[in-house]
Image 1: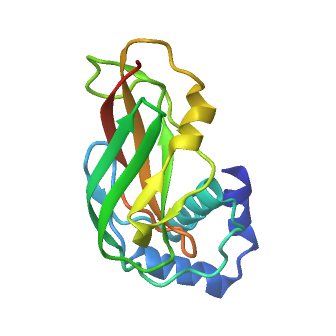
Image 2 (image 1 turned 90 degrees about the vertical axis):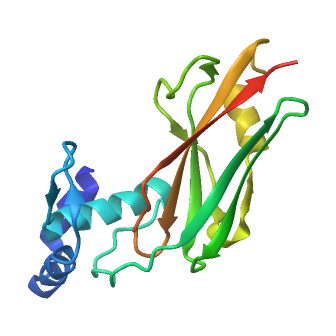
Length: 181
């Protein structure tokens, strides 16, 4: 956060004006659901933090144009402990090739959990949104090795992020049963 926010002071007057102009076209919501118009600094930090967090990209100096968000639906997480095989699929109705699907694993959950507990950890790599599938098996094995026997749930957080601009769709959390043999 410090590297991103401190970069703001190095922008020229026209660059910061462009960010403020972009911000005036956007609406954000507080944790209480109250709508507000952000300022340029907030949008600069939001988009650049997305780029740094998900893609390790350098700071975006020029304000991007307003986003043309993708339309992705029918998300399905398939978790087969035999093998194992962990695959995320979706249907792309419309998306530019700059949009990527990024996944984070939560710790394995007890069967009765309705929301994931603990913090999610991002995996290396991503899948282009137009691919409509993302095989997470190798990353699952790196993260969980061989899960203990039992009936558990696998929970992931899905973020769809534009690699060029830093725009991001709201996060999606998926949970499916994962019963070890």
